[in-house]
Image 1 (cartoon, rainbow, N blue to C red):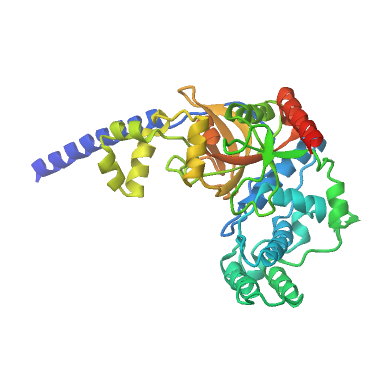
Image 2: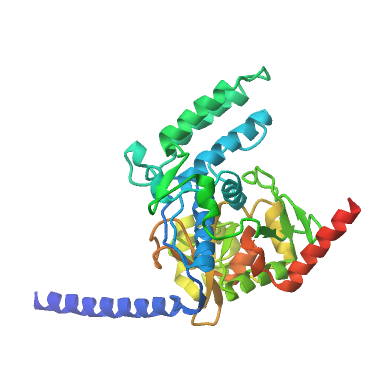
Length: 410
């Protein structure tokens, strides 16, 4: 018995030592971030079970713009934007006989369009997200299960016959039942506003915003509608060379602005812990002791475990313009999430990251903040919205010259 106890104690000591060594090894790979620049942002929100990252991220961006311009903090209402936008999107779907995407997603421009055309309201001027369904946060599962077949009946089952205006009333009833009815007027801090007058009172110029992308299938320093389903309003984005696109983001952060970013977070390098790294998969395979064939057979969980174990020491690709285009054309880069870039940090190896506010609540290792490497962001950006005053002057002049040239040509 004494020998067994001795062996057990020895095993515990050895096991504890091995655990300590493993923790030490893990700590070598765990990022230690030093903030280089962090611009003020409003509170982290939680979109919960709703596909409204576009509304949460872009309203967060505009809240930051108001904060920068006026010093005032606002909490703007995402469900007001969703209510107005889904009706507009349904009307577009009907006009296109259903041959256009009708889904929960959207773009930064949808929010800007709402602010310009319908105004905006503070958070407490409509029922709290999810409260009408007995939930504490937004939950679109039942909502869209009702709305999608309704629209399918309108635009597809009608089989080209004449539509009546009644369908709009029915859809508005669904929107109001699940999201809340948009108020025509409300009181805020003792004063009565309409949504439009409230938007006008916020202290920002809604004509100051533009969107930027970077692809080679359209000429640089021209504008085009980025060809993704959720860009259903077809607004035009400025097409810049990749390096100029990066300069715009860096200049915006340096000048105290934030950026409403839209792009791909479906990559292995975007972890649920709060990191985004553009892994060089071939180099990772060799570091993980795996060849390509074995790597492909690994489950997603096994791959993520190996990638997480490498941490900030994982090798990264250096994106090129050609790589961006190829990933876009072969559907490897997808338009699936929106967030707010607000700062820059570096890890213990000197690698630089953009500090990004997410809308998943205080989730992950950094309580709702993600650190996305600059390589990841530049590689996986679909497009982003920024204040035109945050654009470097030489780039802005090229845009203005291109517009003048187009006007003369037209």
